[in-house]
Length: 323
Image (tube, rainbow, N blue to C red; front, top):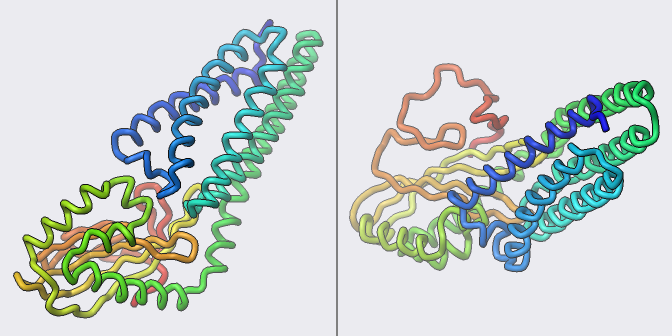
């Protein structure tokens, strides 16, 4: 049976989805510890990669079914999109449990999946039971409705970003982030206790730095700098990142500290999950020129006119407050 333009569009998107999932899974496997993807929730961490592998296989299989457009395509359409809804629903539940903060993005994805499911099913039903002329007209209508779905998502994104920004309590976030830094960082610096680091580590930290590596880092810092003799002033800034309907609140600070083996500057980045602040990254250096710039450490001169808002690595970064 002849494939319509709308079917070609869905085939293309499914093909891209499979390729991106394969490369994404390979990248995560190489760069992160997937056993702590959802933090300390062991069951979620076990199920997540299984679902990812199953999704790659099922998407590729459904692509072959849609390519053939045979009599069983309606049944496979229901099975595939039903699976997709189950997978995204799992992600929403897991995100709520682990405070990853991606629930809204997954909810938008869920709405789009349902809309495309209904649209594709109706289109295929007409294709399977009508002549070529009516199939072509149905394809144009399906493409228009699909385009409307995409435009609705694109319009919702800036509206969501504006809403998030309007609900953020800047002064309160400023106070709580500084309080967290001044309460947790001295405990870490006192003797470079790895247990304190691990206790306060975020899921993001644990994905990149295992508990064993954290202990090795703590030992190396203790050997290099010794123990804390004076905790100086902490200065920094709190900010919000909005990307793909995911809101991430972070705080970046610099602590001047004296140790038994000399003075050093401690660069701390915290991330907020739910109501809790956690350790995202830690760097210790004697370089007086090192500083934070848009979430990255640099020793380059400051930008002449950086403004209040920049686009860094594809993520809209808005600097809100300073301590």
